[in-house]
Amino acid sequence: MASLRVRQILLEVLAFDQPDRTAHGATVWTRLCASAVSAVPITGAGVALMTARGHGGTLASTDGPAAVLEDLQQTLGEGPCLNAFHERRPVLLPDLTEETARWPGFVPGALAAGVAAVFAFPLQIGAIRLGVLDLYRDTPGPLEALQLKEALDYAAAASSILLDLQHATSPGDLHPDLVDAADDHREIHQATGIVTVQASVGLDEALLLLRARAYADGRPLRELAADVVAHRVTFHPEDEHDE
Amino acid sequence: MSREQRLAEVFVELADTLVDDFDVIDLMHTLCERSVELLPADAAGLILADHRGILQVMASTTTEARVLELFALQNDEGPCLDCYSIGQPVVNVGPDEAKQRWPRFHAALTELGFRRTHALPLRLRGQVVGVLNLFCREPATLRPTEVKLAQALCDIATVGLLQERAVRQGQLLAEQLQSALNSRIVLEQAKGILSERAGVTVDEAFTLMRAYARRNQRPLATVAAAVIDGTVEAELLNHGQN
Image 1 (cartoon, rainbow over the protein chains, first blue to last red):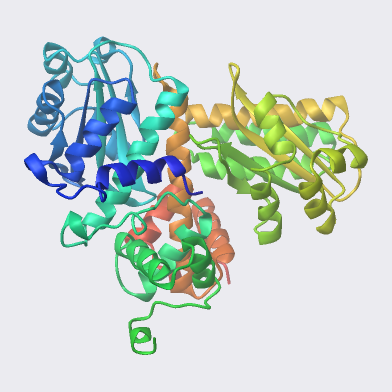
Image 2: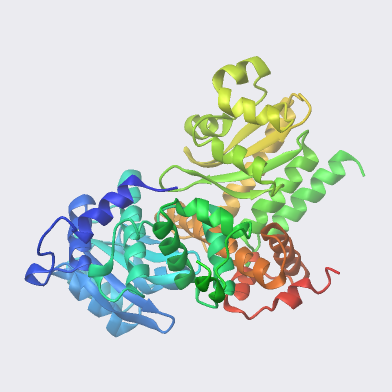
């Protein structure tokens, strides 16, 4: 189901209305982190790429403890963001002092940097696994329901951008109409699996192909997906010549 | 077998599935199947609300698209939405009242030949996380003991949701919900891949994966992941089916 809020976040961080959106070294990721900090009651945020082997590098983080924490997790090879990625679920830690046993290396370092609570969200769409969004706070306490919803919408927006950046040549190629992956109907995920086999590509590329086709045809993704499931539309490589 | 014996058997089966290394989505499918077996109902669906409050079907006894649409429709109106909002069972609503409360839902329900519907909440300490929705072809009334039984099945689903991993303090329920919702997406992606490889419908693909998971005593999520990364061949899943 498409979410207005995710779209709003995408529009803001992709900054299409700004003439010089790369001024002062700003990237889509620094804007996403800054935007998350202003929308959710947290003090810092970071986005990291993840691979099956572990931390794949920090894309951006806000100044201060957030940067320290990304470095800590990358260096130590342990921490909530790695668990969030491997367990494919958010890791919500309202009080870091209770977590020393779980991450004996990470927790003391994080506490020393002045972090009291960590909320890590996997950036994923089913089996498509991309990275992690880490949110930090300097005071302990849980995220309330609405704050959690907001954080999850930031994670959905980040997943969407990260998916597109895997194949787009530069962030400038991104268009908000193309990156709106918040639609969550089962047929979209089934169609992604079908296109994976038809076009001999990965799940991530299959979803991008579907989104690109829906955008080019000016129709809702869900509608195209239903056609793929019903085999009214196929993505066999030879089809390209027919259309 | 008496009803009591069968009931005992079902609860033993469900308790058995709650030991380590079980699959929450498979448990939800089992709960749906047992609820239509033990209660006067013809179709059942287990629904979880995502973080936006959108009701997502996690498991159901039917894959018929028109019935699945009945669940989706209830994001606008219907007993599921009411049950989720108030956190109380919405059962035994008569046809006149149903027509008045949910005109669009009622029309779709009637068109499919269902004459009664019930919704029971999945609750944990005041928080509602989902709904068990039952559709009945006969205008049957759920007796108080049957409402209790349906609620017990819901409670098992909630416990299952929490028990999927080692219980920790913290915001566990939110973590589990997100995990279950993403597992559902993995399952849909795997259905698509398998259907295309094996030349079957997505619904048949699901049946194949579930049967394979059962035969080999592997969690459904593991089988779905293996289909996606190609470590389980389509032929292997078909084997034993013929």
